[in-house]
Image (tube, rainbow, N blue to C red; front, side, top):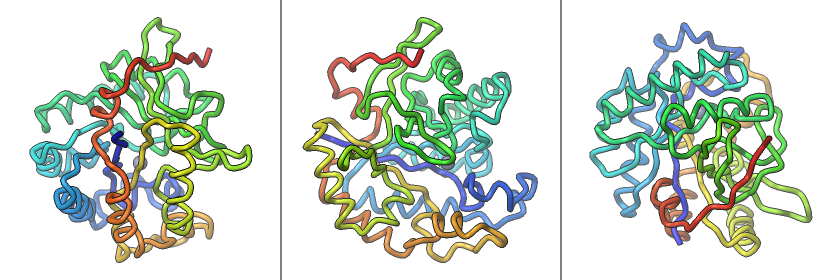
Length: 287
Ligand SMILES: [Zn+2]
């Protein structure tokens, strides 16, 4: 059984936690490190013979078109991480529809492949933004991977399944959903999908949790990281709260070796290929 390996292609200054510290209009003036950091993923996946899904931000694709072509040429799946990295629930319906459509087209033009998968900035499909699932489906996406079924201050939507399922939408359509990985620890749903949790928890604990999760729910899981998580040398952002500083910079130097080891422990593939291998998905509705 393959699991989904996913990379959210964005730069270190675009994370939602830094919204208050960095003006969006200043992004272009900051040192870009996303190309070099994504290259590290390309090299590691090539070494391991693994194909992954690269959820790419439209803002980055516009400025690094060769990166998108390189990802596609290497046989990986190019998917969408939206355009602006604005949280979905902070956008108007129309703004969201426009950027979802335009970034899909941009990525398709650059990669010369259909872009079927969508992941919202900071997993911001929550109870406040369930309307966005209709827009994602109407824009032509076949699957979404934006729902983190846990409790968190910025994201989280509980009540749905913890393994891939099909969402029955209010518009009458359906959208496959690959929820981010959790494990049930004594009744508490702990996030173990990657990112900050992969850096925060000791690696032995992550391994224990994934093994436990597979014994509880023997279905594919998704693992995610960001290019900046392979970059311990990245410039530090000034004036950030201690919590955001901890979440962003904690254990960056340990990620590369942990990822290398994780890729040997399980079989991974693109999210599209993992979904294609699954038989009929259970149906869930949020309405
Ligand atoms: Zn992101």
